Image 1: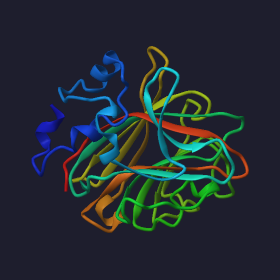
Image 2: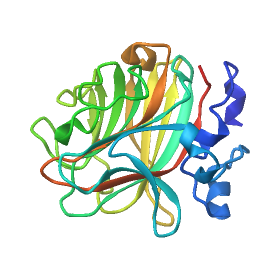
Image 3: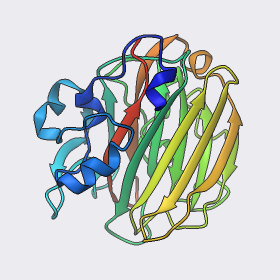
Image 4: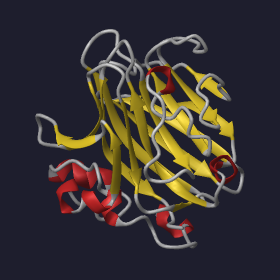
Length: 254
């Protein structure tokens, strides 16, 4: 079991582990295959998430709970953070699904962050992906719009210091990030200071693709040994609805 390596502190509370677990029992059991109990978001998401800007918890047509980071209007920014602080000097793994949609082309994308700025942190719109200016952070972008510093309109990137104009590493997935839901898995090895990011489509039989394999010290990048994890997103002159759901976390609390 993955939890056996988490000797330093307890696991992130089950309310966060299930914060975006689907309400249907079949989906919940699939997300919790390592033996941890997942609960629907209705069981207590409010005390587990800090929502800022345009971010809100809503339901999709299948009545799954999702974090809607942007709603499809212009120049929006949204962020959602775990209220529980995570030990960034320890290894952890997190998995989530994302659906970036509503319009074509869509902009600008989402990012997963480990940050030390606090649970009210919110950055710039447009190419800022909602985290520009959050200096104490390590971000993994899922970028759907080509701004000037970007390699293309469908890429992942590791970014330090809250500056999306400078990419530490980039990769182009084989699947589109916009228009169809996808799953991402991030695995951090604290001893090796190594971050791996995997992506796959939700089509039956699809394979997971390792896209980023980067040496990075999350605690150093966040400027703290204990920090917050979560998501940001933004729109600019081009818009999108940008949703995250089925978010699970296997991490030690600070």
